[in-house]
Length: 235
Image (cartoon, rainbow, N blue to C red; front, side, top):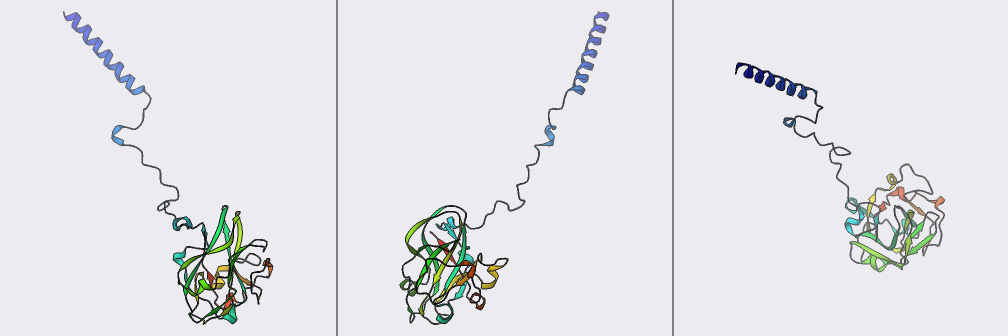
């Protein structure tokens, strides 16, 4: 009996030593359970990276010259100041669209105005007129809200640079007929020169939008007097 007991104890000690040795030499299988899972990787861009500003599609538009929430109140100046001039606001399209309407923010009315030969249109980067509205004089006399003004014929606009053109004619009281603006004149052209100005005028004495304009002749003389950059949307 003593011999068997001694042998059993020797075998048990040997097995225990073997288990300890196996535990020391086993490869690591990950962090200790008490350590918990690794922390999540930070989101790209840091805090607030998930926020995106308003997009035209949020308001059922295809494009715009700027968020209309930022559009201020802009004077239409006098008939002598802008009448007969083609005022251009540049817009860059990032994808192809079917362009059917130009949205204009009409802020104030002059019920005594005498308007005629007023138009909106679209020129491409070569200065070629791609589309225009009929005379919008009646729409400038009613409902001072943002309103869509239909082009006479919609067109397919490929990605690229375009210029929305406004032509006003007639007589109206300064500070009565007013439009919504996204920029205060001179500052919108920072870093730019003709024919790439973001806001400019060309020509004088026009009763209709010409089929072509020379964008190299873009002028800021009227812009610099306070004729601030109009807000436009596209649908």
